[in-house]
Amino acid sequence: MEAVEHDFNTDDLNPIDIVETLAERRDWEFDRVGEDQIAMAVEGVWRTYSLTLAWCGRDETLRLISTFEMDPPAERRAELALLLDRANDLIWSGCFNLWDEQKLMVFRYGLTLAGGAVATASQIDAMLRGAVSAAERFYPAFQLVAWGEESAEAALAIAMSDAVGRA
Image 1 (cartoon, rainbow, N blue to C red):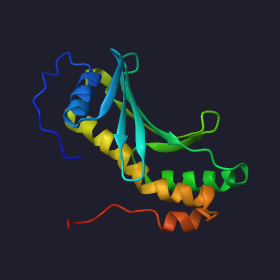
Image 2 (cartoon, rainbow, N blue to C red):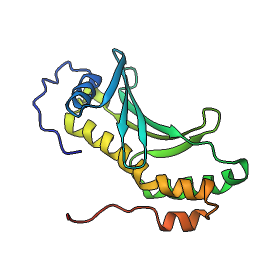
Image 3 (cartoon, rainbow, N blue to C red):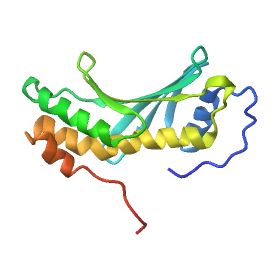
Image 4 (spheres, rainbow, N blue to C red):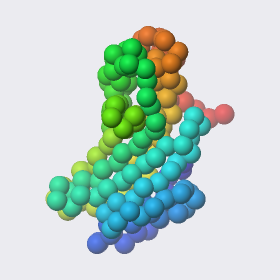
């Protein structure tokens, strides 16, 4: 994804309107669930991720939740929890959680816009890129721990790191 440069009139713009515009430009499948919520599917290298963004005016926060299916065997959950803790230590914006009941791996992030601050297209684009990037980076490690019987340390050591430079 590349940075978005677009002039939005943000005086009274709902952040979800910006998300919808970004999704349309990228040809992402999306559903405007309501005035303050949008759900979309974003294809990554490893899989398609479900992203939901919701605007909560009460606490002035744009919430992002990115999910993919994950139902590790019971005997691997403790090691996966250790990997989640270690992965979250490496992520500055957002965190992973395993929602056992829903059988989902979840990446959560909240952009606080307190005091009437307005989200920009670039900020929202960075949120979306960050969520997909984090999932893509750690997906192989999650798989190795859950089904490959690797330790959290070994899986984390081979997790993709951020690329430096350009090819």
